Length: 288
Ligand SMILES: *[C@@H]1O[C@H](CO)[C@@H](O)[C@H](O)[C@H]1NC(C)=O
Image (cartoon, rainbow, N blue to C red; front, side, top):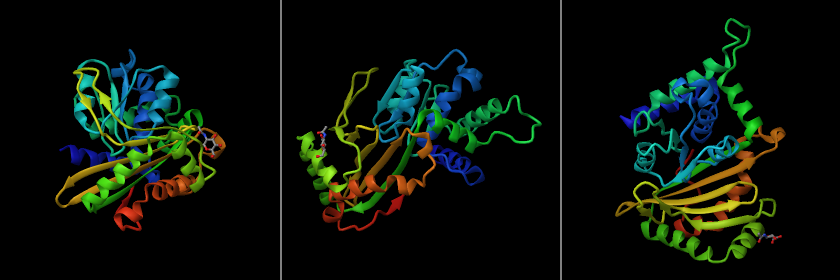
């Protein structure tokens, strides 16, 4: 059922050929929830995203002064926050979006949330000659909060040993932030300075449990990010996922083709991780 819901949500995001990334979607729902959705009229208790989901939600939370959580991938982390009354809206880059009416992703809810936002934005405009569209809402959001260009590269069925070595090498290199910054600047002098590099670890504020090794993060001074995660290290092989995110605050530059805006950081991600050397793959299996 969650997968079906996810597909339904994915279909919705393609309305009229304009694609809303899941990371943008949860941010836009959060930004508009209080005005547009009566259930949230008294305010949001907090918002949450999974670690690899773009920081679009962070920018909204900061601007609207909302309690914000970055959690590992997996719905139990959102569930704990929502059960404890700490979070009203949550989402992840892989399309799951939900709210505290249920402790699961809910595609139907996401569709209704968007319809509520559309209805609100068009409330003085019904019968008018031009309705406010999903695209208009997204463009308006980028103008206000900036845009997080975002892509995910999946390398599936990679040799598990090679994948582990690649990750271990990244962790080892993180011992010196200035070396990380230096190497990345050598690959692409135009990207912002690297201001932090770590392996994501999460202490659940509700049950106190600690989740380690949840992915490797690089944060850039301009709010851009690179994330590497390893999953499914069974006998059949592992999947390496690379999440590449370029933040653009300047509203005159939020309309670029995503692939152009991301290309310097993509180059950094592939060369810095030495993914071709480690895995023998010259291209990812899937680009989302
Ligand atoms: C990052 O590297 C660049 C180029 O080598 C340098 O100018 C800058 O000061 C470095 N920044 C940090 C935070 O180390």
